[in-house]
Image (cartoon, rainbow, N blue to C red; front, side, top):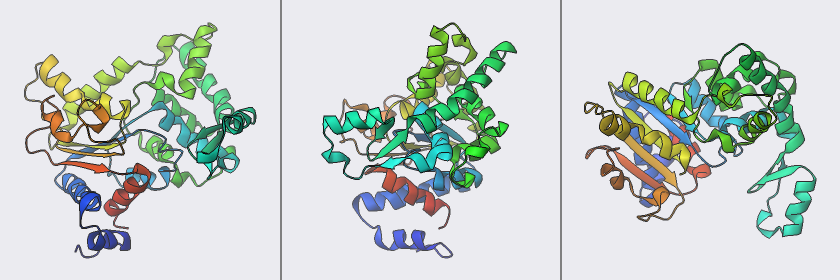
Length: 325
């Protein structure tokens, strides 16, 4: 057992000895080993991890330099900020499995958009951000400037216009921690998020140009340059959930190696996925890590872990391990 570790870490090392539990500890130790040898780490956030309040611990992971780049969905990008400014207006629905279509309709009429057992308040969350982000978009366009989706969110947070609305400690917001560090973020498929939809509506109305927000292709080329510049000691890949947040960035290695013919590009030096998808071939999110070898993403000896469990349970445990909690 590791000495001088916190209670959670000691608990995990004593009792998490087999099956998925052992994989949790093995993956956490290997993550720590990557950082100790000077490797960098990409963390991908899928699903609704921000609404699950992952920021309470992920913010500290960012502050303690245990992640160097994030790939996330547009939902995770915005929902952390929504929780920051409208936390008291969220409604928890613990009996969500029993809801009828009529119950769901009534939530809609109340402006409550449900994410499993948690309802996001539309007026207090979406609209509170909208008036400020639209101004930032328009000011950038007027100045002939273009930014990535996450950079606009950083501008929003750093401007201070939302401070009067803060309802939780900013230490519990991973986006605030990321903005303070200007942490690199890749946000593929941002267009399908609420803010992406709002931006598209302004484009349709002729009030903004689509080019004012940088595109997914530009995210990929940014990531390619970042990977090239930072891979000297390896870059690990810690994937929470499936989907585009993980699929998009992991492809940067075969793109550089095969399409750019940069055959000195190193493979990802570590891979872990927390997924509740059934392990299967043909279902990408359920594919075992070895399949990624055939696609030129992982090497023969890349440490590989798949933890078949709920990410809202497992990710905080691994982060607690890394923080010696």
